[in-house]
Length: 450
Image 1 (tube, helix red, strand yellow):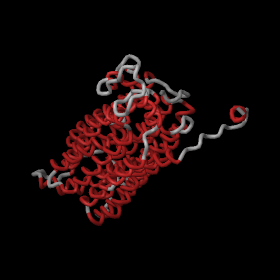
Image 2: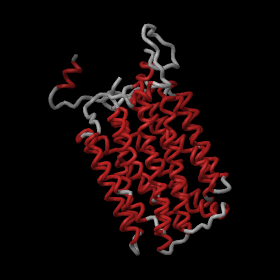
Image 3: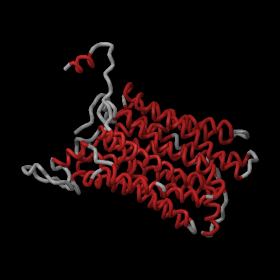
Image 4: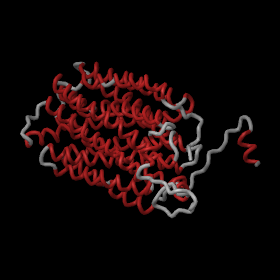
């Protein structure tokens, strides 16, 4: 009682709930997986030009700038299709647990990222990237759900921001690998580096426990993989109920708006992040810098982008708590739109635009931190029994939208013969996102549903 009085006394800030060893260890396990997820996701962006320059002729296609841009966009689109197919992990996590399913998704993306090193043509590379995308896509929903359910209420929101920084720390690590390993040993060795997450998967299975909220729901019969203690209620049907309930009247609005908003964010991620390396290499080559120097500059650019995004991820939960989820996301969307137009629509075409483009990457990175808002917002909108399914579904639909845009980008880049203007046009998606925001469900000051 004394603690309650002290906590509520004017001028005294309540102490945050201390984290247990289990919560800290579990966080670092899923964080490591999310870091390596970021490494695997950005590897292809960093090695796009050398990989396609080698594989396009082996596939009977001339390695022109237009073809590299077009087939590169198709590859990104297929990877996003794989991300979209990752919705399969959601129902598995709701039934069998967050940890086991998370480990399985990590194992899939690490093995098939490594397999890409043995590609003989672009068709083999496309197949490996598609399957790797299925594994990569599961990480965000499962890790985000785990942190939301395992951390105490007064810390889970910042936990979402901390978690999201891992993906972009992965960008930084990938940039360092490309600067050292990639520049010296080539793109195939870069893909082999993607095998490292398999070790994290093994550690996760044996060392990390399921979050207490999921265990509680499973104990009371909401999941089919643990013994039931409540024998009076009718068993749930997890194979059907989660998908049906995501579109039930109580959740339909939030599902439609969330899936659309994630789609907008993913379009920005792939415009601002994935094309960074290609843009920097193009500008460096135009400035007379040799191939090795251009690759290293692309790595530095990825590092700048990563630093900016990590800062954006840490600011996002703070902003979302003070202004609300919708207003905070609107600010990030507006900033992302302006940054994309500035970097790709104007700076990319300057005669000496390399240095200014590198500076613009800091802003592209910062506003790309909008994903941290989704990491805390999406779990708040659904109860435990369908949380992973809903998170995975909303993220997956957004990825299909992003894949469609990448296929359109491929045609536009081929038609324009340049990537600057087509990528700049993706900023329009954020205008659509801002129009959708008023219809989204605001969850500020609400606790995580049971």
